[in-house]
Image (cartoon, rainbow, N blue to C red):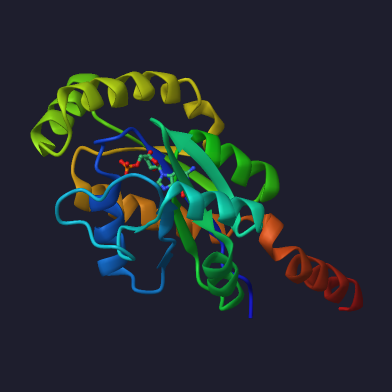
Length: 205
Ligand code: 5GP
């Protein structure tokens, strides 16, 4: 069976990545979503093991030492990282794995897995992003300010991604994401054996 593909999904804090990915997973149960480890505190309504594995700094640093993370990064004084074992297992099972990670982590994935598909979700405009972050009501004004500054820094890296999606309507965005992933599967690099086989067979006709 063919291995699954790695799909990196990034986007500014508050852009609606979580909602879009939830919608995509409801429409297509074949995707696997990697649950990251983080040292940040859970927000109201977040459950350990669902949105994140919420762990201590000591536990996180132990995971780094034991090489259990595919990539990790710091974001506003907290660690965030992708556990290796889940991703490996799902890819081997032929499932596409979604990594919802920020720019530094995306760069590490790109370097280690040049064939990963890299998607960046943008807001329709900057003011919408601020309004969504404020409207979410889960962060203090200082944290919102810091997240908006970080968005400015992350905006510098958008051209490193393969495609941008604009979250005007999350249903549309989830559909477009699925279409891009399907198109990614048709890339010639993933079909070299088949192409070679047909070339050889053509000679024998
Ligand atoms: P939040 O605190 O809003 O849940 O996440 C903050 C940022 O960390 C988001 O941009 C999110 O995509 C990113 N993030 C979440 N998990 C990971 C991870 O495992 N690795 C990296 N590099 N970034 C992550």
